[in-house]
Image (cartoon, rainbow, N blue to C red):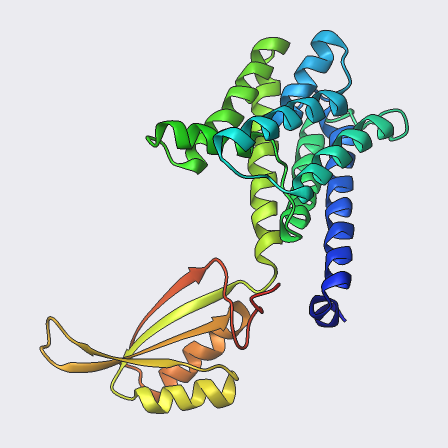
Length: 290
């Protein structure tokens, strides 16, 4: 069904916006249930807005929306392009949902550690869904892009990390509580890990390089037993001085044990390296439009 949706542009657009709203709902839920009641500020404009809420009483959603829109407008001049309708929808939906849900969702503040863990997981799932559907927080990531363009001395990811750390540090100073700062770091770490997992999906795979004198036989078994293809590279051993064939293939994690068994059965003297892959696109794995 999902593939049929992706083949229809109108249905795909609707599907993406529904996904964006769902992801935004999860992030707003995490903010209201776990983060705001426990003064957790794991970076971003939402974290900054949480601190200002306790200092000034201004609503978190409204402050986040104002900061994000202001950054988007400035980025139009600095970056020279629009951040897109999806980013604005994310920003607006988050601002509205956080403020509307504030008086409806019961806060969880009995255990700050549990709140930090569940906040990180729930917020990470929401952000992962949001990004998979083509959305964007439209806030500090844009600020990081502008700083990166202005300086070029630090990478984009480093700028994002610096901004988030500044917000976390500001929260610790404002609340005069180092524990809050440490709990916020836990949330930040968890949500980035969960977000990466959701974005990559459940098709984490391994890349295998197999040096063997029996490469054709190994390739055939990979094709028949694992239903995967492989590529053979011709190589030259620096130490042995002999020509060797290297088999390169991508398999799912749950196929690794079977792959090892195949290799050992055919050539116990084969040399094998395995590496994690972040994402695999193409035949047998994810489509490019997913």
